[in-house]
Length: 209
Image (cartoon, rainbow, N blue to C red; front, side, top):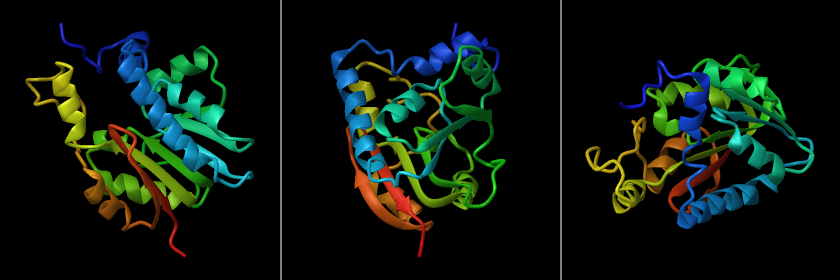
């Protein structure tokens, strides 16, 4: 029977989101390490007094990796799915964690120096609303990653996944190659860095002067 996110238990939901991190394939692990290595190159340049928020932390693996990549900066995380939030808090989470939507963040203007949105934007129905809200709360920097299309779907095909969906990962409703993503994000700030760890695109946007 197909996985149903709406009726899944917190444990089932956590296992579903953990799939990409628990892939035993050496190539998959190598790609994931490349992603976090690229992200680390951006995070190392953040000021020591930066307040950082990871929005949409999912099962929390990315949050734990971010903690290893930053220095002494303050890190907080949030997630829309309340079941995941409850499970993570139940099992102990290393940073402050709360439930919130990218469409309506319970934050003041410029509350965080840096907001991270990793592997989230491709899932959102109203991208413009989410970006407006994220850039409202970010004072200095926003770092966003998405799958690099069509490479992402080609790699899914090559590993025999999602053939009926033409290689599209379930839940991905938006698809960007590098140039369209940069054009979209440039409406909100100055593009400071664009990295392409296979098969992702990571863009760092600094606020307009």
